[in-house]
Length: 290
Image 1 (cartoon, rainbow, N blue to C red):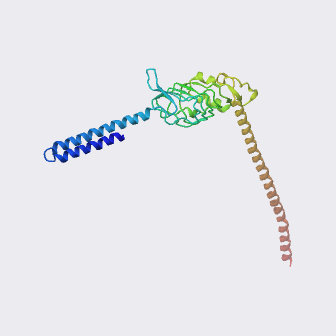
Image 2: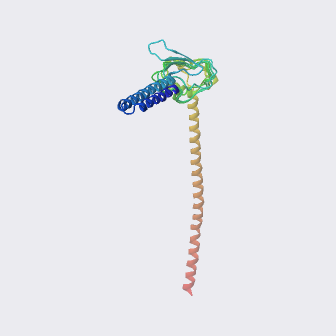
Image 3: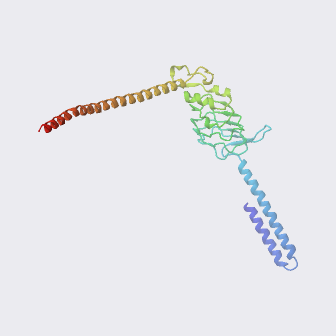
């Protein structure tokens, strides 16, 4: 770009010198020639800038190796394997079709990590330290992703919001899956290829004696780990109902006792009324006699 600017400046200087030598005879032609050259140079600069921006958008990420895909779909194959990466590179080419990030030190996949890769069809995240897939981690890959490798990581559960409709064939083996009610409910919401979910083999479970450990969670048809939650919910409802019932009974007992006390006082008051009336009648009789 610096060389192009120097070229433009030199051309302008030459034209100005030529114009100064023949100011009268070549005024119209010199003016047209000068502006035509300048316009041509500007167009040339715009073309170069476009090529530079395209090169930046499609150039390979630092430290990674890129090659053109050999299939008919085109795009790039980008290999960033075994580079001790702790986060996903930010300069992945937009035309990447296969991305290999295996054997690194990734611990989580943030939201929108691959949002700008509309052609991505194969993603390898195996042999990392992944323990968290944030909601929206695979956003934007619903229509393009065909294969997803999450094997040999530290995943214990899957969040359906991380996939957002991705239906790719997946490898989920080699993770310390914790089988509980949350995972059982999440599997029903996942749109991953059905047989891919057989790679979820329970290393631990909510109930150790429930027979889930070492079993592919999806294939255990009679395995219902939500029954514990249901029982807990039922017990909580019973305790709540018993608490309300106790409060109602206590209020009724208090109400009855309070009314009994008021009734007793009122009765005593009523009993005292005839004696006063008798004294009044006796006084009236004495007055009459006198």
